[in-house]
Image (cartoon, rainbow, N blue to C red):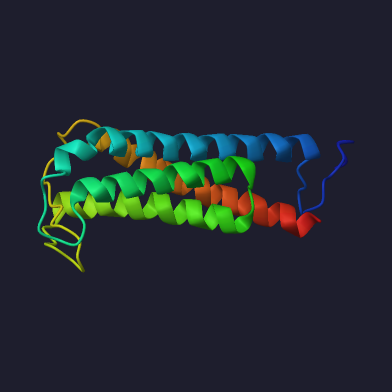
Length: 155
């Protein structure tokens, strides 16, 4: 039975140049936005945690350091969308996401000079928004890594 419709053979599907550019732009913008949201929440809330002293670094200082790193990586993702930058973006977002989830549900206690950051509630302002941004940023960074790897393979 011949229906006259052409049959497409199985094989590699290649995205056009414009599609790749748009995908890359969306991944860069989304990852950078997620990292910026994370940084803003950490900078805004750092003063709540400054008094948590008695360790090498207090929680407020840790929040500020994390925020600066997130901002630097957000700029790097926008300016230099290479595989290494995507890996770093993933590590920054995923580690922040893991920390907020772990310290919400598990009382880890002080670790290696870090304060005990156990806070068994999603109630503090910005905590849930930050966690969502960190999780989304980690996923978008993984997508960006895949995009950069695909582009590198096409060259």
